[in-house]
Amino acid sequence: MLTFITHSPEETIKLGEKIGSKLVKGDVIAMQGTLAAGKTTITKGIAKALGIDDTITSPTFCLISEYYGKMPLYHMDVYRLEGGEDFVNLGTDDMIYGDGVSIIEWSEKIMEELPKRTIILKITPLDDGSRKIEIDNWQVEL
Image (tube, rainbow, N blue to C red; front, top):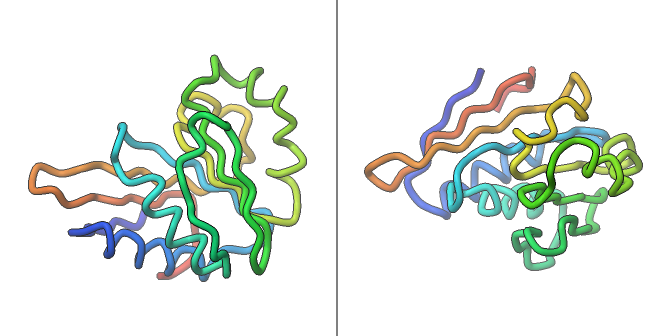
C-alpha cells in the first residue's frame, strides 16, 4: 500500500496528476472516503494528466460524467445507488472494461461488481485539514 499526506487542494490535485500519468486503459479506481474527503479534487488532477481540459465536477446527480483526452475518463458516483445490481443496470461494463479509465466515488457500495485488479484509493481527512491518501492494489511506483 502507498500512503501520502497532502496539505492543500493543490497538493491533492498534484498527487492526482502523478497517479493519472501512470494509468493505462482499463484501469479502474475505486474511491473511498467521507463527504468532502477530496475524491473529486484528486480526480481533477487525474483528468489533467489524461489531457482533459473540461471542468471536473462531482457526478452525484448525473451518476456518470464522461470526459475525453488522451483516453476517455468515466467518472462515476454511486452514492445514490442501492447496490451492485443498480450499478450493473447503468451499463457500466462498457466503461469499466473499455478503452478508458474509470473512477468510481463511493465504491464501497459496489465493490463486488468491480474487477479484481481495481485500484483502491481511500482518502481520509485529518484533524489539521490535511488528507491521508492510501492506494492499494496498485503495483506502480509514484
